[in-house]
Image 1 (spheres, helix red, strand yellow):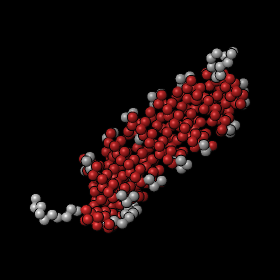
Image 2 (image 1 turned 120 degrees about the horizontal axis):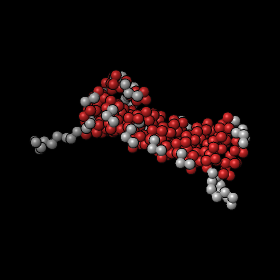
Image 3 (image 1 turned 120 degrees about the vertical axis):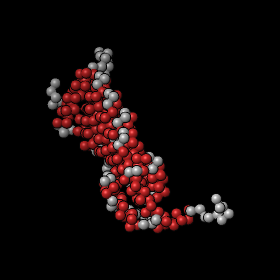
Image 4 (image 1 turned 60 degrees about the vertical axis):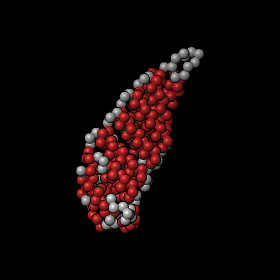
Length: 295
């Protein structure tokens, strides 16, 4: 049968997978080969919708043959075509399915990569789904003890959070990145992530949360003694003192200039709100002197 007639290839393959009075078992091996031929023919013939369906069927066939790696590859091909067609829900579903199939193969890296591909495609069209895919991609690697492979994923997800102006979520994700970096002894990345989280909180004008994060992170000696830790301390002091010029000077420092670009852009806009009020609040929060308490 000619590969130039993909419709007939699909029809024949479909019949081979269905049981009947004359066929007591499905011939998935032959059917899968026909689906693969049809997918290629539809693709060459520039019919992405039918090619996508053929790849889905080919993926199912390879799965039935216990060839999960090939099944995952076909599912990724279907996802790529879904992207070309602008079917965003299918993009997410297909890349997730490909990831699951790679997991069956015991391959965490390609499983994570599949989710990351989907996330990159969806960043503009469905950013919330993109973030979820990035998050799941991180989790797959972390569960396999490959934290050092997650950094680009954390960076990408943080960027999407910032674009969406979800600053609290961005800061929380940066703190999670710091924990991942700690587990693989990437101290420089760890300290950068913690400082970045503090900057994001300050940009969102959430001084109390920035201060809390600094206090929590300072329990880790490597951060407390780092350039990033000292920079964070100076930033918070400048905020407490209402010193706008010092805040702007620190935002131009080399320590902040070495952070990711999305964080540098936020830092260069500090302070974003009224900082003199912070100084007033600090004074008001100080406990009044009890003349009867001389201890």
